[in-house]
Length: 108
Length: 118
Image 1 (cartoon, chains in turn orange, yellow):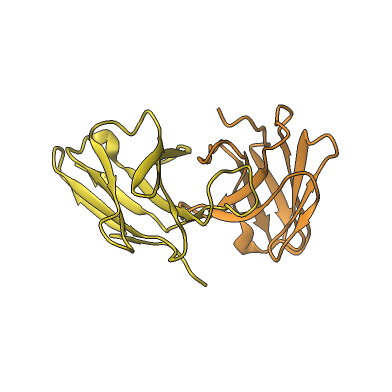
Image 2 (spheres, rainbow over the protein chains, first blue to last red):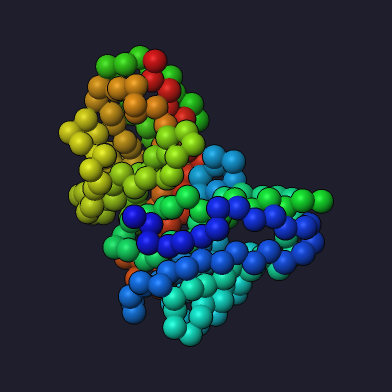
């Protein structure tokens, strides 16, 4: 049970921002929200994680709602190479529990 | 940038044979993991390992599976008697810290070994 809900797929135009939503309404106070992506059966790639404050790194930004029940991963300028499956996960012990994720297709 | 490496990239074996999948985690990481992904399905946790002991394992990780850190750099997954349903991509991962409810514990994955059991 991944305990997060994501749309199955999304499209984004190249150069535009990609905003990927995730619902984690039952998240507990000490659980982080993690985002990974998987490009065509390669190993999952860590993107970003956060607890309650918004986070930004060289890959993406993570916006977490004040009630922590949902979050949005933002890829500010999507490229064709960002086409992948994006997974939103909750901190859960020391194992990552993957769901089906969101297939993001970046189109030129 | 340091990365997790895995060998071989593709392993073909006959049912009933033993296979050993190898991983070299990132050098200063202390926690190691194996995951698998059957074609078209989700990535599934198999086992985590720390201080030469298994710290957590899933239901998939039965007596046919074992893990070992034989030296200071390698981390291996052994399947004693492979079955057709063991065919999958096997991913090794490592992290600096333990526990997904703390700050510095993102897991970094290797490129995977594709295991095909015939």
